[in-house]
Image (cartoon, rainbow, N blue to C red; front, side, top):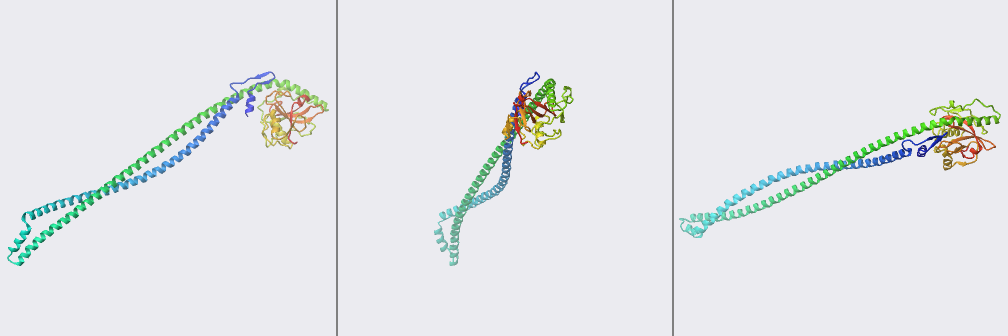
Length: 432
């Protein structure tokens, strides 16, 4: 395609008419289109990668949200534990307060008893109580009462000690619970803070990805608009070139057809035939927009091949409808030797692509081969060159060919090519 576009931008001379480039070279448009298309492809790959990253990040965010919900449940449980512990703390503080009150009151009694024993001299009082008793029974009762008083004081002291130990134990328990409460609260606060940071980071990543994706998609839209603009300009450029080509071709066609009619008449006369009515009048040349093929005054050659079938189309055809390449694909397929490769290029490129594809190519005319001329050879004015089918080879080195678009698009005709022009061609043997 590119080679055709480059050729279209060249100077095309038909009967002295010069076709100059319009606007810009077609290859420049194609280069713009290809460059933008490549950038769009790269952008699509970037968008795909961003979408994959977005999916992965969204999955991480979903997982994190679940973790946050679980953490909230733990926080709720911790809050309940802290509430229960707080109630325990209040109970402990109440118990400690009550014990302290009991200890304080008991301490007052102990102080009073100690003061009594110090001031009243209990040992002397015990003797006085014994001697002042009227009977032994009364003496024993007084001794027992004083002994009970001493024993009670000892019990009070023991209980006082036990209660103080309880107070200390409860204080230790209280301190432990307070520390546990503080540690739990600190741990949960740290976890909640970390999760909040992670969630913020993931949401930032998602936001960035969405922004990058939107920016890349916008760039793609802009590139596509440029591609469409370049294609439209390219189409306009090619349409103007084609219009110029057709105008130049029509102006040069009449003179060329007269020469071809003369050669055809000489050939028919030399082979004992009768010259038919001139089928090549300029007024009879069909428009290039014709869509059906026709055969004009076909002359059979020494190959004794049947006349071309205008409606026959090869199953594999690499030519453009209505052009010389299209016809040769169809002609060889019609005769039972279809071309196996669709890439044969323009008419002037068949010798090159024939060698590339492994066909025998020579400069010796041979019946049943395709003959290819470059632009400027054998009177071929188009820069694309021309290809035809060899129907006959004569002793003087001239050849009879059948072809399409020598007179006009979709028109199949035959003509004799001089030995000098025949010697300029590449003959591609497709095995017919």
